[in-house]
Length: 382
Image (tube, rainbow, N blue to C red; front, side, top):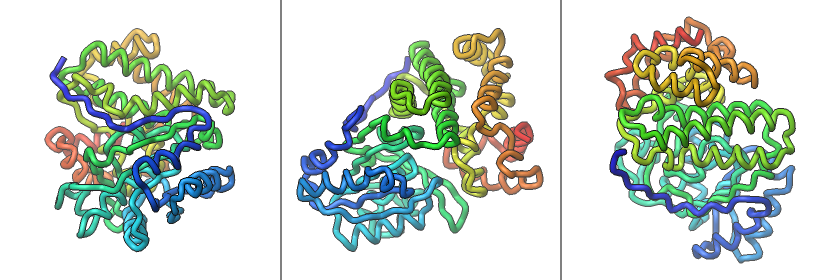
């Protein structure tokens, strides 16, 4: 097991009714005016927006509203949020929504404190030195952004999907009430499942050091995602299943499963980011296409780990059977496993491969994932 430092300053408020604590948490941090970020009108239809607004008002906290943040969030909306936050001189950012909203909120929080264009922070022209305090109420579980320091945003002018990460981007408090996620559509439930699984398998398969303890954590979380997804497809009102799914999504990317792990990378995310940047496909749907194809290509590089995965997750006898079982499960729950299901034809592959090259450079894996290798993986997804 490698030496490690585990640091996670985010306070999680988990359970029913916890959203009613948001005003107190903001007040405890001295907030007087907050930029409230959200995506669709669902939070208004379901009454969450009014509840939060009232809760803030009771603590004397003014709010400025930024709605319309889309899945696969874009830098133009981030810039709009930065301008709004500066105009109204807010002193905190509150995300009410899923990972796309929270990632946008993180970029806004950092961008307000940076004098130049916020995209500089994504392309490495400048480091992140400060950010406004961040708070979150989660309405969809998938990305783990509620308890980590990362954010992913697409440049809608250049079709580049890059990430930022810094300790100042950990939310101060994230509220996770599984009951608020009941309105998530069937499609986004299954896309979320593939997203969580992808977060878990990247290091599991690619790490040069992956202790058995961490492997067991990963496997148990994947099994939990599989079991709870199936339960929720049968009964969306199953609170216990939704609660376990939500907590698994948080644990998948809050640093816990990476402790003591070394020498890993994120090839599936590096490739998928290009799919969602170029074609605006849901991130989880793109991952459920990329992951099985990548596993087929990567299998010979770590056959023992694939055999372990097959046995402990699916009860299968061989590594290749485990890959087939995961792909079959994706098909069973209705998330895509082939590029044509995303409307992407073979003729688009050169364009995707070219776009991927920036991503693999940023992830530090360009020497492995050359254009030729990426082409092979993408062809396995046709």
